[in-house]
Structures are given as C-alpha cells and as structure tokens.
Length: 510
Image (cartoon, rainbow, N blue to C red):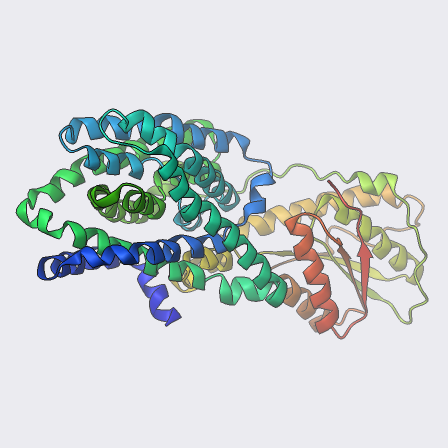
C-alpha cells in the first residue's frame, strides 16, 4: 500500500487532474451532496499526517533571519493583496471565486516547500523554519485577512473561521507533534526517519485527492453548464504564481546567498493549498465549494511550476559552490579542565573520537587527547554528516535516492567539506592552546574522517573496520533537538560496537 501511495504522492501533477475528472463524472451521474459528510475525515487525513514530520524545534535555530523576514513579508505583505486585486478584477460578480483566489494566496507554506527546496539544492533548514512560521502565522492571520478583504462582499463569521482553523491546523499540529515524539522515543531517530516519516506524507495524499474529488463533484453541474469557467479560473492563478516566482527570485537573487534564496522562492510560492481547501469547504457552507474549485485548480499550477523551476535554479542563481566556513572557536577548550583521570586501560594505540561539532563537543576531545598522551596513542576525529536525501525522503513520502541516484554523492558534498574545515580549525586550536602542557599533540589535520549517512552505523563501522582500540563520544542528557540525537547515537554505539566506548557528559548550553 505504501508503495502505491508514495507513487501517487510523487505524481500529484497527474493524480490531481485524474481525481478532478473522476469527481466531475461522479457529480454529473450522481447526487454528490452526501459527500459533504466526508469532508471532516478527509480534512483531518489531509492535515494531520504532514504535521508529524514537521521539525518544530528548527524554528528556534538562528542563522537565516534575513531570509525568514523577507519570506514572511512577501507572504503576508504582498501576495494576499495581489490575490485580492486579481480576485476583484476577474471575479467582481463572483465573490466566492475571489475568496478562493484569496485563500490560495493566504496560507504559506506546505511540506512540499521543504522537498522542492531540497531538489533545487537550497537551504533545507531555512525551508523547514519557513514552513512552520508561515503555517502558524498564516493560520492566525487568515480570519482577519478574509474579514478585511471580503467582509464587504461576503458574510464572514470570523469566529467560525478561527474555530475551523483551530480544528484543522492547531489540533492536528499538536497531535502530530505528540505522534512524532512517541514514535521517535519508541523506535529511535533512525527508524523514525527511515520507516515511519516517509509514510505520513503519503497518507496526507489520500486526504488531498479526496478533498479535490469532493470539491469538483459538488460543482460538476455548474462546470458543465459553463465549461469556460475553468479557463477563466486558470488565468488569474497563472498571473499570481508568475508574479510570485518573479518577485521572490528577484529578491532572493539580490539580497540572499544561493541556498537561502532558493528557500525563499519555495517558501513564498508554495502555498498550503490543503489547508486553504479545508477552510473554504468547512467554514463557508455550501458556497465554500465554489472557492474550493479555484483552490483545487491551483494545485495543478503549483506542482507543475515547482517541478519546472528546479530545472532553472542553476541558471538563475548559479551552480552550487562551497560557502566560506567561519573559523571555529571553542571557549570550553580554554576555560575548562579535565575533572577526572582516565582509568587504567590495556593496549590503547588508536583512539576514534566521534564529534557532532557543537560548541560543547570540544570538551570531550580533551579526554581523548589526555588518554592518547598518556598511552602514546593516535587520535582520529570522526564526524558524520546526515544524508540529505534520506531527510528529503521523509518529507516527500518517497525514496528520493532513487530519483537522484546519479547525484547522491553531490547532495552532501558541501556539508562534508564544511565539516572537514571546521575540524581542521578545531585541531589548530587544540594544538596551539589547549594542549601546551603536552610534549606532542596526539591529533593532526591529517587525522580527520568525514562520513555521510546514519550517525550510529557510520561510527560503529569505522571503529570495527579500522580496528580502533577505544571509541570516545560526547553526549548530552537533555536539551536541544541536536542533543537528543547525539544522546541516541551514544546509546546506539554502546549497544552495537564491540570496542570499548567512553561516553563523556558534555556541558549544557541554554
């Protein structure tokens, strides 16, 4: 089942028109009014699964503030006004059509923002934050925007819209986060990313195509009586998407580095049409199906245009290049002293020190160097870069490695080089400052290994294959998301590795 759902999710540009045709035929042959009873379950199935894979804690990480501010300014300061203007221009006598166009431009962004940013080799972390921030702000602002723009032409019950958003956004968001934490705790980060996370976007696809089917079925007779209506809807949608691509590309190219610019484009153009559909069809009664028709057609333009834009990113922003790495500084190396002496250990000649390159991780290497100095051993530093294609697979609900099989190595190439540079900087600091009391430094810039893939598996395989005598790894007991990951890594290494493993508790940062 998951295989076929993943196939549908990967081919939404085909699946959605097919469901529109089927919905149209169904609505012509049968009385489709009973389908309204399925709107609530399909809405939940559409929204809840995509909440499970959101990394909400990413919002609190810095580094791309400029990109985030520019994206949300476009999302809430420009696009809704353009959508409203086009709605008045094209649908002056059809306010619910204008409402559909407004809703299609109101709620950023979808989980596909993250996937398409990854396909175009943009800043995935920035895209994650744009998705969560845009979704939250859009959900809060939508009732007020709708009342402000459409209140003169429609009866807008702002409390009813807010109630619907509570049920279709915030409750599923909370439920999704609880589900995510439960699965990660039960199965671990690796199993969650590999097995569970890719399934939820595929489940969401059922809700999407179900709502599209219902929206078209409910309006099929109106479409049959006026077939030119579909073309009339496509024109303003094409204009608003074209304008959005042009504006975000221009702003990103002028003001942001390549990765952030690509994230800005997809963070503003990719609207959350699933939630827009749910609002239209749940909060505005029978006439909401008219607005839903506009949003359903927007799916076709959005998915198809996103796929084509990937092909032009290198021409627009230039090919991907390595960004300069800031010198690494670790105050812990200067200010903290070892608090315990290493135990007597037999025959230690080669030590593998696994690091996550966090600010506090430098604390653990002093143990490695202290032990190495005492036993005249050699220290090798290992860092594992996450597999970006595996992360994208979790968001997209399909195996991205198959799609990009010829570019698999290139996806993490820049991360590997950046990690290597950071490690070289750290070794220079260790050599010149932290270990002045030692006759020779046990590590050198040649003792660096950077691998790509699963943290635990790469550490264990390196230790076993190269026959290291001791593995040293730092771990945090609690704290940020990265701390939880490295904690699970330490537990996994202890469980799987046949070599002795020294786990060093690291200082906590707020």
